[in-house]
Image (cartoon, rainbow over all chains, first blue to last red; front, side, top):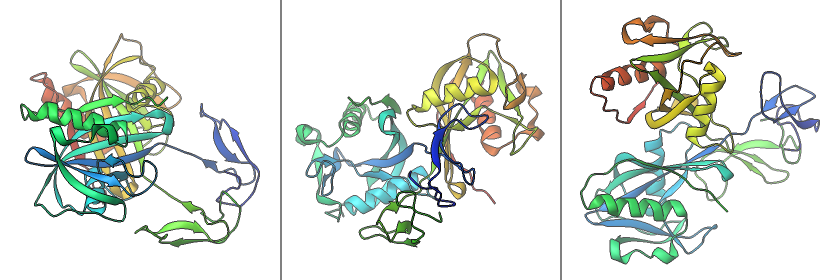
Amino acid sequence: MNYCPVCGSSEISLKIPDGDNRERYVCSNCGTIHYSNPNVVVGTIPSYEDKILLCKRGIEPRYGLWTLPAGFLENGESLSDGAKRETKEETQADVEMGMIYSIFNIPQINQIYVIHLAKLKDLTYGPTSESLEVKLFKKDEIPYEELAFPFVSKTINYFFDDYKTKEFSLRVKDIIRK
Amino acid sequence: MNYCPVCGSSEISLKIPDGDNRERYVCSNCGTIHYSNPNVVVGTIPSYEDKILLCKRGIEPRYGLWTLPAGFLENGESLSDGAKRETKEETQADVEMGMIYSIFNIPQINQIYVIHLAKLKDLTYGPTSESLEVKLFKKDEIPYEELAFPFVSKTINYFFDDYKTKEFSLRVKDIIRK
């Protein structure tokens, strides 16, 4: 932040406001305190019988690797609504939303991931502007060496562990980036 | 947003960037797209035997009403770390963190609440700069008519429902503001 988005002044500095205990960007001209807080990424693990739906990333980062559909929660959305929207945008699939299944804290990049279980309503899915390819995989077909992010491999492993008993329970995990 | 925080230009307008499907603040001078996304509020329901700890708000909004300790998740924190910090800041209490217990979507104000179970490690608690009074309440002592927010009353009700069987399960709820 170089300029105050409220008044346009360049008198912006990092300081601890009165009554606070953290450094914030504060404008010396108009006094506005500019907060920055973590973002929420919402997604699903879409399943159909014993298969899950993955997307081959058509955008950076991790272009060409496989991921679960997920993206930033938008203003005005619930977690479930955002996850359903991202699934549609990245896979064309219309899903029946299930429970919140995995939550990942990634504190170094100020992100919280919230992944829901979801079931494909039918076999309508396919590539989108964000996905080169969209495909259903059985457990032994998963391209484990070509998964885009740790949240993807962890959620897939949780899913197939729980699929044996069909008892799915929430997992919460910190992902520490090197 | 009146000025671009990157270049200081006042040429800011709401438009849908290429490849996007939502209006964002875009700077015509330097091309930066300024995203705005929901915030996460983290908190706890701190308990001690059959009692829970509430704080009487010493700040607006809802000054003088009772709440559970909660506040905005900060950059660099996990959900659990943020909830533990907020509990300490608002009640002086050091808690042993438990599971994520209630999640509330409040889409109209772009907030997601994540409340953890927590146990008081001892009976050290008291007022803070944010809380006029901090007190343990049994179920029949709760000031139900003086609770600050819907997430507070709902989480308290879930807790005492589950306390009967000691089986606590995650609740996810949309709170729609009028």
